[in-house]
Image 1 (cartoon, one colour):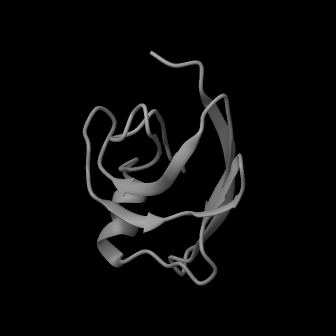
Image 2 (tube, helix red, strand yellow):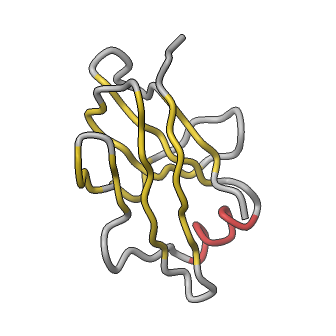
Length: 98
């Protein structure tokens, strides 16, 4: 259980480029990634987000999905996971929606 939360906008273009940022609250985040897996499943991280302030994380400039990752995105199979020392495998998670 956690009081942490997050919000943001991640945009995936038809050319598979991806951009955006998230803002977190009530968490001392140690990392944030975009992972590939459907709702209820865990998957590998595919893009590491850059920490731009204590509570903001952004997709690195020039990030692009592979064809398989783009297909997973279209099927609802990408999510953002924010990690902390208290929850090393992830404290908050949000599935990317098309």
